[in-house]
Image (cartoon, rainbow, N blue to C red; front, side):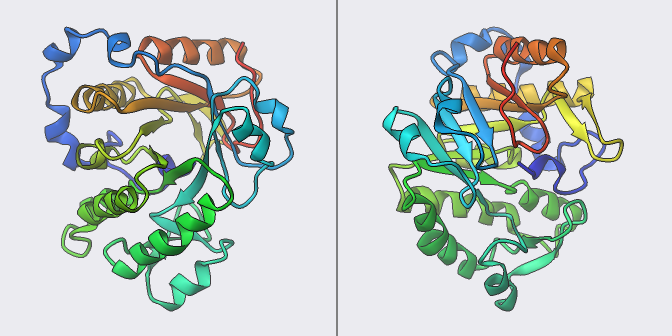
Length: 295
């Protein structure tokens, strides 16, 4: 998962395009207990971007997100009734992906992500990218047996448009249109969207799950340490996710927080806090290469 660190944000970490949505009545929200909004959505889930763990390591999880290129055998997971989603980055492409050279040669790349060297932002307004996603990239994931897709880096769109409204005009609406096109072409698959908070009002009715990444606890790449998200940003994200639940009652809300695996007390606090918010939580390391047992 990358999108919480993809681009610089404003002081709050929330783009201006969200201000109107965040202004929805807090008083109305307080009349509804979060648990009533998320009934039946608290089954354990996990995300794992490696291929060394055996299938039985995932026995306690009902939904698993795996890298679509490097992953354990998913057949046993599917046979046991689990939902298994394959990772796909739609807002940028890394040099190690097999399709990188093709999109580079077609001129679909905008610039390198300064926070993730070797990963380049994509012009979502270009219909050639939409065509490739719909006709090649998603079929390549689904033919492996995945139940659906986990979409990452789509919050790049609104952030670029915020940084330069003229140069990147239409990026946010194009990102939403791409997600809608995926749903139109693949009506039966599960779709999970990472962050992309600006997109939720536009696509909340066509995706199945939205993920709040680094809502309560995160990893600071500068200090190379795990730390709590500042209270203001934490509350803003919780409010956004609760608003989405009210607007789209069938939308499931998951969270992913990062923590030192040795800090059992903090991990326990994260799980209890996110469950009290009505969310379906998971806690992992920033590398997402191991499963941390919940204390």
